[in-house]
Length: 466
Ligand code: 6PG
Image (tube, rainbow, N blue to C red; front, side, top):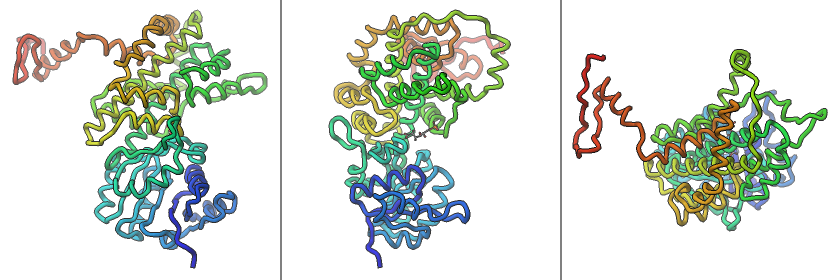
């Protein structure tokens, strides 16, 4: 008879294995489960147990009954499976084997609404469910990921001590792990993280485009020793340094970007809220456009003419990059703030920044700065810090945008940042035209600027035009 163990991990893929090693390295006793598919997945948990010294003490299973029986009460089970069907399938098999008060955590990139549904379904059976966004990739999972929790608060209180142990620690020494609210709050925060990630990646790709695909590599390394420092900047500088046959290796990679859906979810979630998250959507659309390769080749033949090269210095480029990033972060945090109000989550933006400041893909100096910024300010763009950055960089940013138009260089995210900024500081917009049009064709009504009206009004339109 073996001793009961503290945690069970389901799914020995890349993330499941790295997290298991992280837990075990902190002295937490584990049971590992991986399904058995004859000829395809056999003895996976056992092989990992033997392969990694940290996992030698762990118990390995391919049978869910034995796996659940190995866990102390209340059971704490972390699912690290592909989102969607694989997670649903295991949950269906697992649930009948659990007891009231057991805790199940979904650590995958699950859509927040699916997490909401699962949480309410499982709570009817007395099972405490948490949806936790895990960021940091393989290395983060092993050395310390960023953990965004949501769901049953009682369950979080039970597991948080262990989660704090495996999480990354930020510059203030705090674990990058927090509870953000009921149901799908944790997965929502992770989804917005990924939306910000998409735009951060795209902005770096645009910096590369504006540097004419060359010579920028050492400059990016230099930028990474300034306040622009970030994990994504660091890896971009690193990957640009690779050569093959005296050519940058990067030029040998097909220029069509894939995605696993979280950027599309983030874009859709913003629009559902009525929030203009155009940095995330521009980055997503840039990936989508890239995937239409055959059309791009055809369009290039039809429309391209010889263009001169841009005249943007690296110093101007950095200012444009910095300002665009600040707008990207501003939008991500504002979207979260709005979502928290809409879904009744008590979400503290400084705490979100604290969880994102280390361990995750969007960790950066700016994120670390946001921990303090949100303690005194409500909005990144209305802060004195942004004002200063803008004073120093606006002319450069404007010149960059002008040059991208002049030279027909596609920089969807940098232009989106500029458009958002210019539109947001326009006191009198042209939405009166939209309102009049809506009323003209659909009698949708409008408010007047010179009258208080309790009901929507209609215009004196002559409907002959219909
Ligand atoms: C993370 C990443 C991770 C994954 C993305 C990739 O925080 O560790 O965001 O979750 O890299 O899901 O997404 P795409 O395949 O859509 O780029």
